[in-house]
Length: 153
Image 1 (cartoon, rainbow, N blue to C red):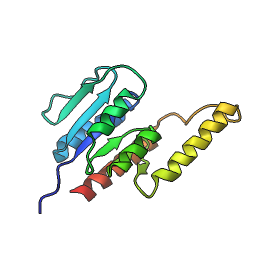
Image 2 (image 1 turned 180 degrees about the vertical axis):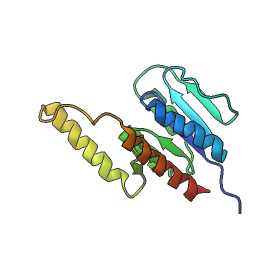
Image 3 (image 1 turned 120 degrees about the vertical axis):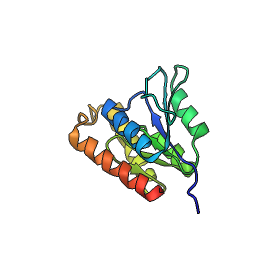
């Protein structure tokens, strides 16, 4: 039985360049269509498998586009946990650029933790954000992507 069609979607506005490069190479290596969605044009390598989709500026415009077009077998790469929750709600999978996989079993806890941290930041109890993206994050992401690609083949 042939596997169902699938795509990789990138929430492109905040995705680190080295993560995009990993995704471009992986999509071409395994023959999976990849769509990068952003509020500005982001160039992608010339390939029939890779597309850059520019949406209008505005809060959640790119997120809404992805949610509207994602299918159950797709992967969405995003650091946006609310977007990840919406994607998982459509039976797709989300992957954070640092390698955290969001699925039906995990996304609720991640969303609750994110909302709690938002409350702490807005009250002034916590300042700052995550550590800078580094080589360990990049490797963790690449490994998680490879596991997802192998599981879906």
